[in-house]
Length: 217
Image 1 (cartoon, rainbow, N blue to C red):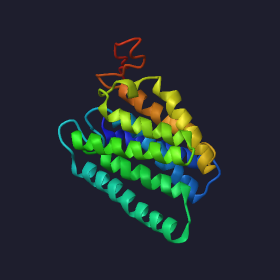
Image 2 (cartoon, rainbow, N blue to C red):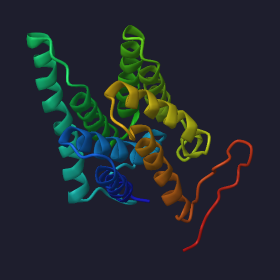
Image 3 (tube, rainbow, N blue to C red):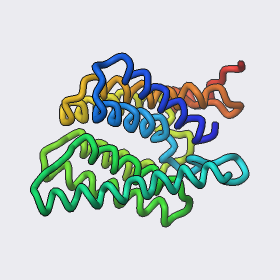
Image 4 (cartoon, rainbow, N blue to C red):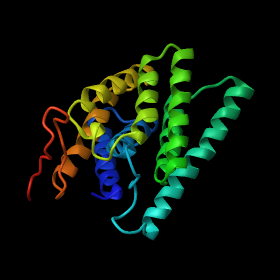
């Protein structure tokens, strides 16, 4: 399934969370960003097909990719300046900026792309270790390892869901935003469910059960 479809589903999940939980702009940004990123994160594995079609990347996909990349770089630069110059940290918007930047980067392809994504993962592990945040170390490990796994392999299994939920729970505690863990888990699960509707299906129970599970609609 196209990355743009996964992203649209994730954004819809984030929007639903905005309606369900008490509304504020920073919480809404967190819900939409976390849900969107979670809905795409399973495709960090193998050859990247995020925000692309089966044969070529369309104009809309290119625009979304560039928006994600620069939509992460610019606010990250501003947030770094505020932290260095004024010792002020904005956890919610920092999370959104990093997620956008990572999405823009992983939409590219090849060994260089995989290496860069893994380096980001290693930096997240280091940051989590320095700040004693286990969830950030877990996210970093996921990001560092996933690009080198076979596509629709371990990241597309039921075993990935509790791992992602634990990461989301840590982020929820860090941001103090109710529902982030649930939004992250539902966003990730939406990717697996959507891919189950495709002809290739998903190996939900791999490596215990190695056949793809498909649902015909």
